[in-house]
Length: 255
Length: 265
Image 1 (cartoon, each protein chain N blue to C red):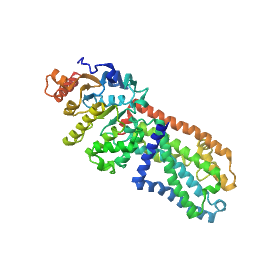
Image 2 (cartoon, chains in turn purple, orange):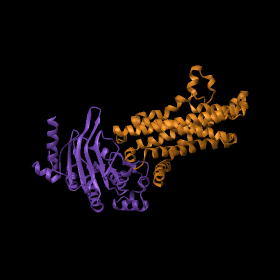
Image 3 (tube, one colour):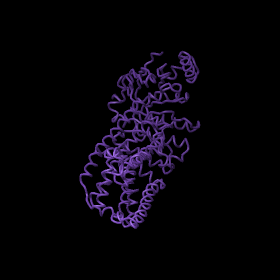
Image 4 (cartoon, each protein chain N blue to C red):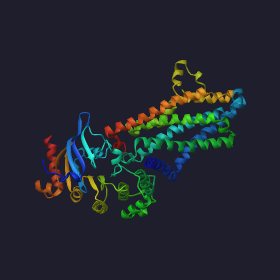
């Protein structure tokens, strides 16, 4: 296991996870993990299915209580200050959809009000322009293609200018062209806004491209962590996918 | 405070948008209460021609059915508004957002009120124009009866939402069936003295029992019994407290078990 430190100065830390575990009865979904994320960085959460990635994201967003340990988001305990923190974070996943019967504009309006967005009409117009969904505003979400739905979901997740954005497989089911478009947009957004991203993905080229740091998970534990380049170098591989396969298989056979 | 109201407004807006784009939903709201009322209004007419009791109080069956629909639509309004979030796999987005559970509850209650007013309001208007039955003519007490019925509907609806959070859409049947278990016990169309003696104490635990009893007394004897209304109010207060507590507990339980995102998938 690497001793590589993701943080540099405590002042820049926006996510701090210390000895966090999540148990479901006898099953340890997450087993005493610790990590930190620096402001404006993108952290990739990697691991096989059931490794505990979604469990961690849910705990970081405060919608799943940890069994033990401490989670601080923006220097505040997520469970104690969830109401305040929730205004500063947002979430996009193709597995959690927006109401299909409502139009794109209606959905964005509803979530804009929920997040207390000022100048909501302007904000929606800006997002529609940036994400190229202007022509979709009056269409029902249920009638959009997968690529269009993803762009709308991203628009919803940026409606409150989140300081921390959770992305759960944001480009799943997209063709390479659309997926690349989304990644480019998110990278530009991050560079302009200084937001921090937490990305769970099975797409290794995506992680390699977008993430400053990566946490490799297996059976609820952190197997290794570091920057994609660092991991590739240390494991003497050509790309992150090969590193992932080696770590995942090692983890499988070691148990 | 303003943000608190804005978040509730957003959730109500979500349901208004749904009605705006989905006319079948609005028609469905009006259709069943209207049909029920028409059926029982004709039955009333027939009985009035053949029975002295119904000749004296010809509106009693129409009132019964409209009041029953108020209770049913009140409950259904809460549960269906919540089920919409599960159907659309939107609960995860709501759970992550700043919307607090109590704000979700309040928005469900307001959405239910709107649904009930559309559904029962339509039936009430039809009763007035088609059968000359005027609910307001029975006085303020009757309005208080209606308020009690809708509050009871909310209590039950919130308890069912708690089950939906816990068990997901597999608990959907309760949304449609739960109230019909209570119907024979609360004397919608007959006095509870008809029930077996051992069952009557159970009826006394249901707020609607006092309301329907009070409604019949108003029709048959022209008496408005305040004590019946007060008993219904008292039990309703306990019920709404239990309903809200159950939903809050269920939400907290879902946070421990990771059901808020899971139920949406």
